Image (cartoon, rainbow, N blue to C red; front, side):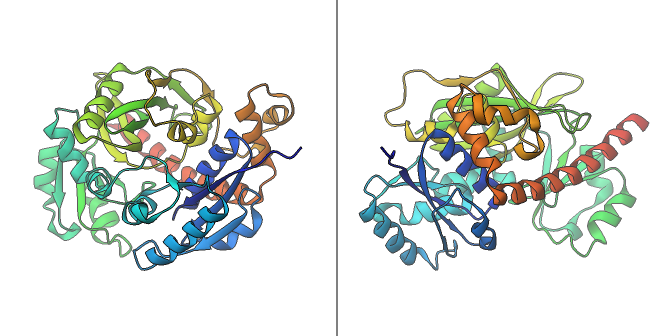
Length: 383
């Protein structure tokens, strides 16, 4: 007897995040996945995780087309579930959601995205609600910066960040005026504006992942890894009452609805936790929590009504930086693991060339950030 596959339609502009969400969907059980994406569609002929792909613009110009396409699929598959994976997709669903004849997982509305997908807006939100954030300034463009004034106010090094870029794009840690001139002012390819200029915090990076339903947290996981000292270190999950309290403040104050990832850092000298930025969407290490027992995509589908207890992931280790094909230690998981979601996840990734290509691209970006972090580490030693 053939098991019927549950139908999904996933929307995403970011291939790396789409891979993570597809993997989480297939880990739940047999799935029939259609994807809507606006770029990198040439790779979809290589994947076995989707049944079909639809190319569309996410800027609003194709909204009517998407409503028609999704509703046509919903007629064929009445239990169709729509999953917006990233912020552009969430904005699409916020616009067209009332016109869809399919269920949609919890997702933030446009006002929430405006607040939490903008580094300056998030900084102001945190300040207003008494959450720890490094001192920062907003500048219109790189030419409007008085380096002596801003370095005197924030100290050195300082961090330059575009307001709404993802994946560390445009982020520069600057240690001197000479470096500022070379990497920011004189760099023709550095055209980001406006910019958040922020005090640098020395310490260990830590991440907060959550799902909230109308302001109430229903699933939460805190993760960290030893980076940059150990590039291949696995992600580890742990308990952090301070971060969980911050998450509760954020969600209750904004009536937040959907998943969110927050970047933070534990200050080296004091142990204080500083929040840096929020990503009101799924994140690039989603499969790590799936591996350790908390599938946020599955939690989204079980979110109404909210469960009486919060699902917490407070322990576990997962190495999701390398594809299973180059990790022989994982091969046995595909055959013998008693953890059903873990077994299904490894099997799909091992048999999917597209996943391998996307992860290889992501690994190259991680290596570039690792080199940058090592340079920063040596600067700290010298000073």
